[in-house]
Structure formats: structure tokens, C-alpha cells
Amino acid sequence: MSSFARQHLDETARIAAILDAGVLDRMAERLAALRARGGRLFILGVGGSAANASHAACDFRKLAGIEAYAPTDNVAELTARTNDEGWDTVFRAWLAGSRLRRDDVVFVLSVGGGSAEKNISRNLVAAVTYAKEIGAPVLGVVGRDGGFTATVADECLVIPTVNPDRVTPHTEAFQAVAWHLLVSHPLLQIGAPKWESTR
Image 1 (tube, rainbow, N blue to C red):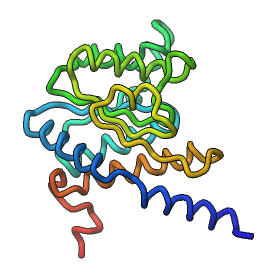
Image 2 (spheres, rainbow, N blue to C red; image 1 turned 60 degrees about the vertical axis):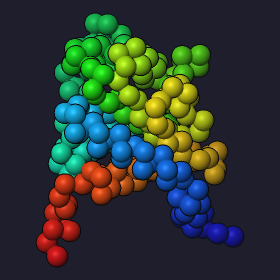
Image 3 (cartoon, one colour; image 1 turned 120 degrees about the vertical axis):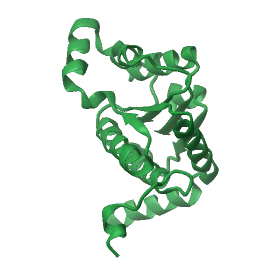
């Protein structure tokens, strides 16, 4: 009988083998165009995906020269808006306060992609709806069926489910694979990371 570690790694390899690389290349093209027109990148996530959004915003700024933000990095505003206005609208209100424009891009990292019907991550649904109203492109890296994000995004990488018991860890792990691929993409990378630059 295989060990848990071997099973998990085998699942990871299966996901990597069947991911749609074309979606990632098209995301890179959209992000290169975003940088060229001086637009901003707003990366949204909840829970583990919020931590990923923070890391991704850093990498897009430092390695790809894109002005990028993760609203969850501003804990004072996030908690004030949650307390005063409610959790469902925190990201929409943050985007509105940032004067979201058509030249910007909203990038969603989420396991489920949001669902108003299931009352899950309604804050993502509201933010994505607002972005579409403004005309700002929406990108996503999501799991399972992708929820609301996958249905309306301009480009969305849905992480395939190879084991229904491990949707969350695989999705959040592959969010990191996706954004690291993007900031390393020849269309986007403007400088080598520290360790690569010291060879």
C-alpha cells in the first residue's frame, strides 16, 4: 500500500500533467498588456488564498514590474469594512475606493470561486460582478468547478480534481505554481530572482 505522501505527490503530478498551459500563456499575454498600458493588478483571495494573494502581489511587483495589490494586506481597512458594512462587500468596496478602471485587472485566487447560491465567498462574487460592470478583465485560478469566477472570468485556470478529499490543498498549492509560472514567463519577468541572479 502506498504511503500518504506518495499518493499526494502522485496526485500533484497528475494535476500538473493535465493543466491547461494555454490558459496560463493567455494570462501572461493579458498581464503583459496590463503592464504596457499602466494598469494595476488587484489580487483577491480568502483564507489560504489570501496568503497566496499577498505573496503573488509581491512577486508581480518585484519580478514582473506590475503595480499589484492584495486588499487583504490592509487589515485595518478590511476589518473596518467588515465591521461597518459587512463581509460580503469588503472587496467590492475596496476596489471602488481604489477607483477600479477598465485598464486594471482583477485576479481571483479561490478554491471554490465564490457562489451566491451556496452562500460561499460572496465577497468574491460581489467583487467580480463589480469588475465586470466596470469592464476590468477578470482572471482566476480556482478549484473544483470554479464557481462564479470560472463562469465569468476572461481567463480562468481550473485546477482539476483528482481526489475529491484533497481539493483545497491541491488548489491552493497550484495557485502558487500558476503565479510563479506567470512571473517567470518570458513575457513578464523583468529580472532574475535573488538566487538565480547569484549564479
